Image 1: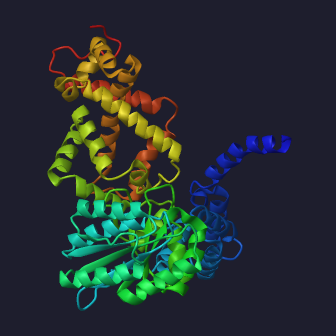
Image 2 (image 1 turned 180 degrees about the horizontal axis):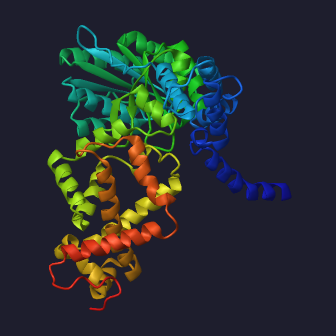
Image 3 (image 1 turned 45 degrees about the vertical axis):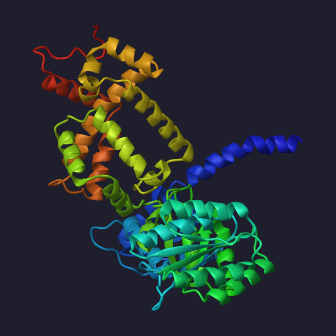
Amino acid sequence: MGGDKFQGQCEPQKGNARRRESRNVWAANWWARSRLEQAQGRRGFDQENIVEPMRDIRRALLEADVSLPVVRRFVQAVSDQVVGTGLIRGVKPDQQLVKIVHDELVKLMGGEVSELVFAKSKPTVILLAGLQGVGKTTVSAKLALYLKKLGKSCMLIAGDVYRPAAIDQLVILGNQVGVPVYAAGTATKPAEIARQGLQEARQKNVDVVIMDTAGRLQIDKAMMDELKEVKRVLNPTEVLLVVDAMTGQEAAALVTTFNVEIGITGAILTKLDGDSRGGAALSVKEVSGKPIKLVGRGERMEDLEPFYPDRMAGRILGMGDVLSFVEKAQEVMRQEDAEELQEKIMSAKFDFNDFLKQTRTVARMGSMSRVIGMIPGMGKVTPAQIREAEKNLIVMESMIEAMTPEEREKPELLAESPARRKRIAQDSGKTEQQVSQLVAQLFQMRVRMKNLMGVMEGGSLPTMSNLEEALKAEQKAPPGTARRKRRSESRRQFAESSARPNPPRGFGAKN
């Protein structure tokens, strides 16, 4: 009993230590970096100065849920390539090593996007397989919608006869995405359902048939025999294994078994919007030789997209996925809105209407954890911090919605009037302090956003080095300096934007 109690008390500390270690440990390990800096004097990498970096790379990959055998082979391959490599002038050793590791990860995952294969004569048949709970039924509907957008007509076949709810779910999802579903109930064997469904698809001249199959909590002979029979009947063009990104290091064994037993042509990685960094992606390609073709990044039907090895490499290493972030932003934000926002930022006229619009735009891009995962340097943000940020956004929205249209457009009115802030606090059920903090944050955002936009040349995206310098400038300043500078800038903005002859009196004024 005493031992259990002691262990329970130690667990949180151990968990905190692991989280600290997992925060992109190898990129931020100063000891390893100092060892690499010795390489500059030696004009290259050698067995001695890469020991620590390789150890940290190994740890980072294990934290990203890459299987141990795959990690060992990968680290050895990188070590063999790095040793004896000369340094590039103007590039730091640690940056050069990051580039080598990133490129090796991309190569290991296939290098290029692997597209779905379509049959020469209709219909193309896609068989989905995987364990129970990985999201096969949902992926079936997502895949149908994805193919519809490519101009393909689709039909879904409900083959999970052991879960009546799965059949009902597929019918509902099929209606949602506008795709017909062939369902024969739970009394018919899956192979017979496959035969009947394929026959109906041919009669309807459908381009693509997607069959959902039953899963198990674990792999067993009956499951594999059933899949083999379904595959024999369908003779599918694609056999895609659906893998949960949260599976972790067990993904390697899972992929190996399915590939040996039924022969897969590729995989679909799901639940990448969760906490996982996607190390399972590395295991899938390495152990099976088959590519990951698609990834699911959210709960919406639209959240299925091609698998990009270079972007996944960045995610595994905690470097973010800027391209996916930009693409998602372009999907939910019109060019005219972006230009208008840029103009407001540069003229320091960003208001609460803009703030509300931007938070809702980001919400349409997916979950906050997904969006944050795309941003370089944000890998250290914990799930608890993300949940707290989501709660804060809800609180902020409730306060903004309690404002009048004039107050949203002219935040200076709130800065000047304690009475207005008190009314908003009462209407939104929040405190006056929370309202005052929200107003102060808006003016701080104005200054910061304008400074970041100033880093950009001609409205284009800044280089990462310039962006990092801009973000770190405040952190290097003496305590209080950045805050005093923002306050001074905010007051100057108040004075310039005010229509009154006298400048605003600030938060301490009385109305």
